Image 1 (cartoon, rainbow over the protein chains, first blue to last red):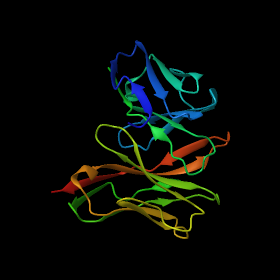
Image 2: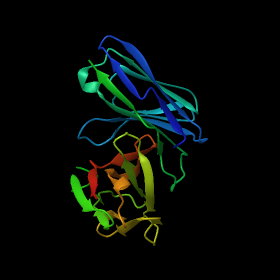
Image 3: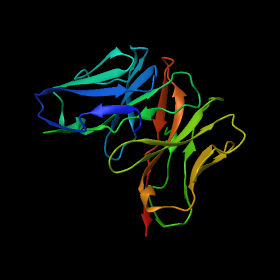
Image 4: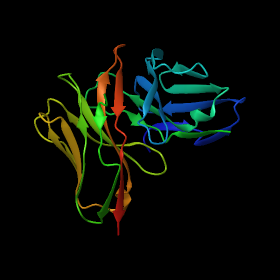
Length: 114
Length: 117
């Protein structure tokens, strides 16, 4: 139990579908992140939210749309995805500016695009 | 240029032996942090150990220790007395501050460790 919960664990969707990934953290952290993990590639940072405000978009295509309604919840809205978007999507949270504190990750959502 | 380099794509180690997973990094920052994470086949990323650039002692957490050689820019993970449950992917990561002032982790490509009974 990491304190970061992601749902669903697995998602299969067609390219024309719209779905959302959900992340919730119970650690009282003030920063939340979306990462993408593709096969044989390092984790890629997608978005950063600090205190509910998006502070970074790492050149992510607009078919990925994040939402952070409060500091405990983070969503990733998906629409008209491409097959290359199939990957493991990991959510993380941390206490900003706490040097020795790690980012805590959820279990991830394994996304498959048909 | 790659900032975190893990040169061992895969390793096989006999149970109960010690294992060292290599990690080298590249940064011009004076202050940075290095992390090791474990990722079992189920997908979750589990934090193992942290080393700060100003820490004079090598970090230790139970069976995990970090062999930190700052001048060589290396931060190798040492697992003592390996167990079957240690079989997983292991990632080295460095904390950086982005151009927007955010903290982010830059990960290496990982090492797949398999413990043989």
